[in-house]
Image (tube, rainbow, N blue to C red):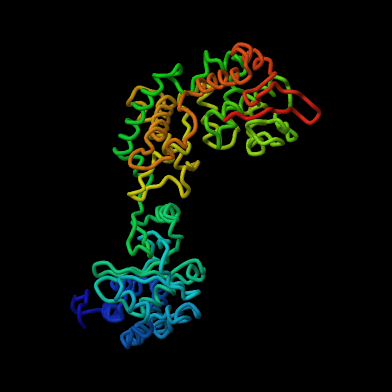
Length: 515
């Protein structure tokens, strides 16, 4: 026997079977024959199941000999090994019918030949489709045993059958593809998912979850990287980004009255609505922040504070703008009220801590003076990416997902804030301000294009934006700022309206929406 591992003399019956099994496994082209042999001889149960994945009739008379000798010597373990092995050796490979060879593109021979000639092959066993464009991404981690790896020899039809047998359930799904690729003498079999050519984010994030190194762009004929977001945000490169943006934000805010973006104390917001309502102010600003720029945000919040002052229902489904509206289509509802409703009701009941979404709760806490509160929005999502390295925050651009990623970044930002002698709330706001200002004025940040002038409004602190809105509204109504402030205090007007409110049985009528 060639290439035996067990060489002590004299060899036991068990050792002879080990050697015979190893040789037959190796000649049959089984990957890792030594490990499989150890399983077969060392554990008849696990070894038997392992044999189910192999080509038939690879074990010969040695197992029969072992059975006879074991019976003669009352060796029941040996008898079980011999009989079990002999039985399983004659069991045909259970390749699911209808998967392989259903189409000319999915025969084992075609898969082997295309892999050898082209370095890889992808085929949908349910449809026979061989995709010519799209983004292919492996479904399993590289160490997953469902990935078949053949080292040091050409692949065979038996290898194809083995891979399909192992992955029958997954390949039964018509969305999944059997994939092969060869690299430096090693061939890999896996199950891949195909994404649209434009869905690089979705494909990459899918690959990130399964610890892929790269995906393959069929149309371009090249691979693309899959990075790890969690590793990137802990890197020195990311820390440097935060430092640059913090400095940029500090310099920007120095030019405006409020140096602390979140601060409401001593501002016109507090003067108009009262210290006793500070939590309500913070809550309504937070509740109306999703899908709003800061200017729109403060105007919406001012309407809910007006309702609060007047003791009116916070949610008014019958609210419609009048026919002479200027800045919003006549007959419109309060913008986004249905989406904001649950959080608005929590604010009016004083349940700010129960507001939905980490971003909204974080903003309410920051505006209430919590030094550890942080808010990660679309700007944070964008500044935390490096597309050239396959690093994306989420499958959708401009979305920062709640949960694990949010929690991780909170910890990272808190540590960086400490280096600069700032609270997490201050530091994160400075970074946000710096990024937003650069994105708006430069149209590019860290090599990534931004919306530029399409980013509406200034990056000032929220109290400064509120004060600017008062000035603009007073001018629109041709009254003094103080007159407008007095009306706001009484709840006679909000920053939404072009003209003072008039009440009716249908609800309040708003004369317009300044954006």
